[in-house]
Length: 472
Image (cartoon, rainbow, N blue to C red; front, side, top):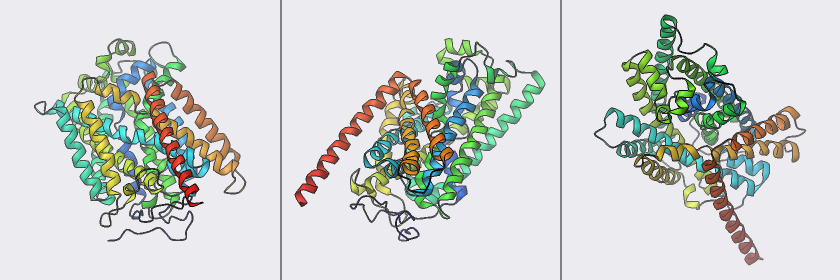
C-alpha cells in the first residue's frame, strides 16, 4: 500500500512535509495508523514501567535515602517539559518532535542544534536499554555472553520496527501488559511483607531521607533519575502517524508522564522501605548499588520474585529500546527530509509505511554502542553517565521555542503569559540547574557532541551560501 498523506490542507495541517525549506524531500510521508492507546504504549515502553529498578541503588545512595522524593521532583521537572511539548505539538504536528519545534519557534540553526542534541540520546538510550536486557539475560543464562544477548535483542526489535509501527505497537502492548502485571505483583507482595514484618526504615524516610537532608543531593539524584523519563517525548515523534489530530498527541504526552511518575514513586517508596542497607552503606559500596532493588526483593519477598523481576526487566528493556529505536528513526527521517542529514534517509517504505533506511541507520549506531559497552566491564557506567545530557539540552531549547513561537513571534495571536512565558521559563531554569548537577563526563561529552554539530551546521550554511551565489 502507498503511504497515506496527511489531511492535505497544506501548511501545518499535517501534509507530511514540513514547511520552511524549499528543498524538502517530497517522498517523505508517513502513514497515519496510530491511536491514543498506541501512543501511550510507545511512551510507556520507551520509559519502561520498571525503569527505576536498575538505578534504584544509585539514586538511594546519592539522595541520602530520599529516593521517592527524587522521583516526585523529577516528575515535576519533566511535567514542565511535557507541557511545553503539548503546546508545540498543536502548531507543528510533524515527525521530528523537538527538532521541528525549535525550527518553528527559534529558526533553522537552533532547530538543528535541538535535533542534533536529541539525536545523541535517541541513539544512546536504546543502547543502554539493550545492554540492560543483555545483562539480565546473561544472569539467567550465563553460558551465553552478554554482548551476544545484547546483539540478539537489537536484531529482533529492529525487525519488528521494520515490519511496521502498528505491528510493533501490538507486540509492545503485550510486553507492556506483562511488565505492569509483574509490577503489580511486586507492589502487592511488598505491601504484604510490610504489613506482616514492618519496614526496614522509617515510613517517611523515602521522602525525607535516612541521613541529613540535602537539596543539592536530591537535585544531583534528579539529574540521574530523569533517565527513567527520557522517552515519554518520543510520543511526539509519531505526530504524523496519529489518527485524530495533534490534541491526541498532547493528551498522550501528559497522561504517559503522569502515569509513569505514579508508578515510579510507588515502587521506589516500597523498595526503600524493604531495603536492608541504609543509603550511607550503599554510598560506601558502589558495587551493591546496581543490584539493590533485586537484593531487597530477594531478602524480603523471595527468590521467585527476584527472578520474575529480572526476566521482566530483560524483556521490558529490549522493548523499551524498540520504542527508542523507532523514535530515533523518525528523528533522523525528519532531519533528512529537511536536508540536515543525507536525503536518502528520508525515504519511506511504501509497504510498511516506515522510514526504513532511517531506522536501519539508527539501529547500526545503537548496535555498535550497545555491543561495545556489553564487551567492557565499565561499559554500562560509561553509557549511563552521558546518556541524559543531550535530551536535557534539547528540552531547554524546546522551552525557548514556546516563548519564541507564542510570545516573540506571536504566531498564534496574543500569548497566554502563564502558558507561554512562565511555564517554559521556569521549566528551562530547572533543567539548567539539573544539567549543572550532571557528571563532568556527561557535560564534556555533551559539549563535544554540540561542537561537532556546530561544525556540521557551519558547513551546511557555507554550502547553502555557495549554492545561492551560484544561482545568482
